[in-house]
Length: 231
Ligand code: CTP
Ligand code: MG
Image (tube, rainbow, N blue to C red; front, top):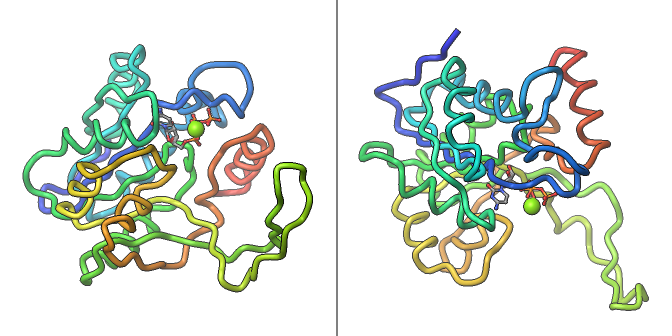
């Protein structure tokens, strides 16, 4: 059944989905690879569409797959699909340019975090609505982290208590994200990094284990298991 988005919602969600998935191994672009019989992107969009504040979803798809992605997502939710770019940052910028007038909160959410619960979309959006211009969901770092040199020699141990592993969706006041992308220089791996460079404060909210990024084959196997056990 096609989800309905909320015409009174105040949130646009950008879904960068144009990556190749090199670390997952040979095959189709990662967002189009199957997880329990459906593409990762379908899982991701279904969960985004279930978040009640969402007004608009814009997907940045691999340029060669824009039409097939439109057809694939039509039964899932009403979405706009645009061609992505060579780097994630370019894909996000392309999706941001396609957001219609209206939503003043913009979330950026990796298609690769296919099992992210709708509640996390809502909690990030709520923190932006509450007055924070930049919001990221985070988890504590569980491993001890070492800094090393080019020869793998240990330079020191980083204080784990002060570190966070960062997930998506990352949420922003729309004008802040637009300014950050206009000012962007070298590509970064997340959008909060661009906002930090503007000097705008970014705050953390609790992330979710289910928002893991499917990067390597192990992650895909874990996601299959999580789905089979009710995620
Ligand atoms: N992404 C994108 N456009 C790119 C590169 C990445 O939209 N040019 C998206 C991916 O589709 C993914 C998200 O950004 O949903 C996070 O990127 P990552 O996990 O690195 O995915 P890939 O780039 O596909 O994987 P890899 O780096 O292993 O090739
Ligand atoms: Mg990548």
